Figure 1: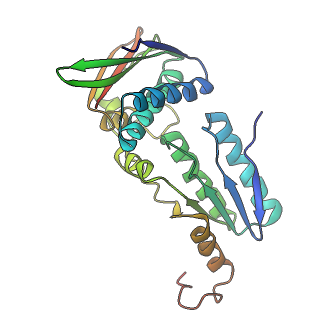
Figure 2 (figure 1 turned 90 degrees about the vertical axis):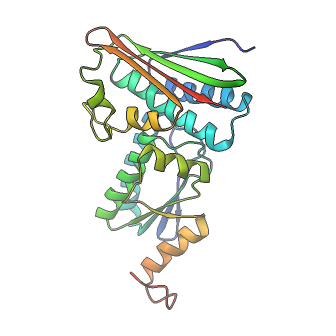
Length: 132
Length: 128
């Protein structure tokens, strides 16, 4: 049983560390190369959002189980300004920053489960799961 | 700060990305490469990403931007060695990088640039 890992996201080197943690956990769970790549890429996009839009925060990795299946969950939390319109933020090409606007919508396509909870003025929490 | 080395190969520049780049390193590469293109009058830029395990939207945007800027400076950019899993992920992410030419490996990428430098060099292949 692996324990949860909490990583701080304060600068762009931390995004690299998030990718490394995502990779080692995906490998440990026996994900295929494509599954690994999708999960790491999604984690990278969300870690960058936490840094750029949330002003920094945390990434938490945990192994989850459902029946016979196991999966990998990553949760990104910040106490930034929050997202006023989540549906709009999920649309490809929509951005309030200088990115391409693919981060949230793109990350959602790369995983099996995607949950987002955001309150203006309080922060944002995005959780993704990729099942084995 | 770390820098990614840029090698000169005839009239082309070769960049081999071997580390998991953090964002500032990617931005520095874009600037360094643009300066080198002008310095040496490069006609082509080869970017070897075969060591990269992932390309996210930030790195994808950087590659797209390098291709656009080098085109303005009369140099062709070819991204080579993309891993199959990275290609699948990029398409699903929604990043198709329409402005970026790709080739399977450095040799094929170099052939694209060579054809551009000497259009008559390889008969039948000089289609642009």
